[in-house]
Length: 143
Image (tube, rainbow, N blue to C red; front, side, top):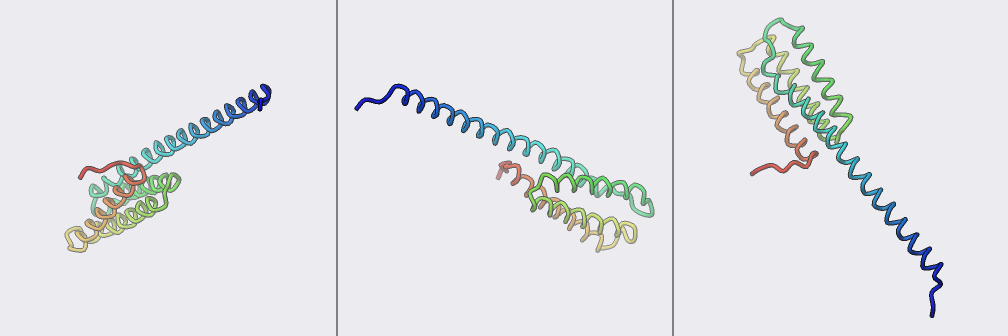
């Protein structure tokens, strides 16, 4: 049985074209995943930078600085919302809510035990965010 040379040429060309398309598709997915990871890293980093400033919030009736802080924090949460995933966004929102409770307590009773509890809760929410962000970025944690 003899194979037609034209048929062999067509099958070879079709195979090469399919392999080329597959390679381009794989490369496109890799580049997109890299882009998403870079966007997540930037959004998570900004959120972490702002969340670390929570304890430096001024106590007493200095509301303008606290208001600016929470405006910036809300923008950072919005960026986290855009890049996801959902569980990281939820952790960012939970931190924001606990930080707001902390800020309200600073106004009233900065030396109260409830203040310490609110501060610890916010720190716990921040740690949960960090853990979920590391998972989303596929960052290996040292033991």
